[in-house]
Image (spheres, rainbow, N blue to C red):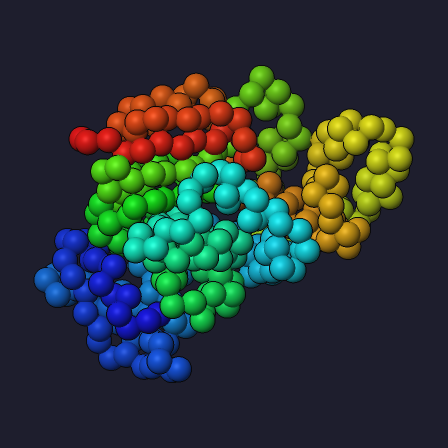
Length: 330
């Protein structure tokens, strides 16, 4: 981390300022050491340039494994498509220039959206509960306007009401309580600040989704074994995947392939090699997480209203339920 980024952080126990202790620097960045609370003396380690406010191993371990294996797959410059940039801009609908503003990224994963937030010239405070932060750091370690930490969405160590903008994509459904997660983020947003977030949808067809038949078993399996199984499954099903694309319309083939647990991103314009990599990556993403909590669109809208957001815009979007709003006065 950059030494001056400590000003954005606070103790998660008493919300007091932090100070450095026993630090080791490398290339003008803090590689290791401790963040110590100036009041209660609680300590938080800095490991491999990243402040850690949670145990390195936790319920999000599957995401840490996933995004360190597939650390580049969803980054546009490696996939040769602009999927991440397009989604970031269309979901947030923010200005291209956010100079002098602070943006919180909740659940960075491997950092597929982080670059685009930083490209607005905002200061980006990015966190994830898993060691996926290490994959994101590899991509963004040279950006001066990005701070990456490992932290819990229910105990975010950024100062309250610090952010002008917050976005949270592909995360809420994988936390124990999506509404409480959205509530925790709201506390970090300034009055008049804007939020953009999404959540898997609960539809009349949700329980016909094959992954929900398999997840009661798959989420309990060893992650390395499950990932191996996902690779074998996609390899075995790939001839059927390709045959479906020849026999059926694109829309029907897509639906059938997903039912067969072969995620189909043909419409994204990926190469055949990338299609297979994304299929393995997303199959593991479907089956491994401890939590997968879809929500009805009306319920998602109610949460924004109950939290006091103004100009609420909730609709079906990239990841299902997609919501935006401006924080009103309490």
